[in-house]
Length: 253
Image: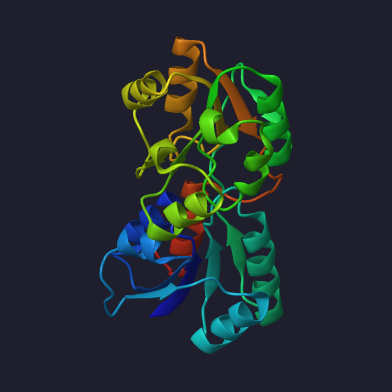
């Protein structure tokens, strides 16, 4: 039975895992944290789950120890540093590497910014409350927004570490929305209306991450959409990745 290593607790990673279930493949799936682990099925003879962030050396050691036939990078579209490390580790271990890309979105009338710092500066030039939906890891830049404790609302994962990170930076608990997405257009609209949001900051997380629903909700309510530009990269679609793996397994497609 061939061994496959998948990085990423994303929806694509979980979908790929499910697609491989009927085939003769033993999968090791690496996720960054306990929250991503909680979304996965239980371990079995064909599934091993590794939890925790790995540096480049740890990745190489894992790959060499595991005797994998291929490596699939299904990490988040904005996890550029992780992808660089995974690709380098695969090359060092001389194991085929495939990057699974999430389809990009039409950002419509959104303002595209090169960084979250640029997004924070833009909020400072605009009026009204802003909802930040870019995660809990890079929020420090938003504390530079004048009156951030009153103006900014954060939507983050319902994980203890996410909430602690927000509170540690001084964001009030009443401005935290801890929920697991993706969200429908209706729920996005309800949240924007509930907190009288005039600015929505997001990443282009694609259909899997609920971006189209966010964009439509903002458009209907006249909310200014600010979108963090995606890192440039090349790779395979989900369908192309599945085809590659099945060919490796000797399965007719």
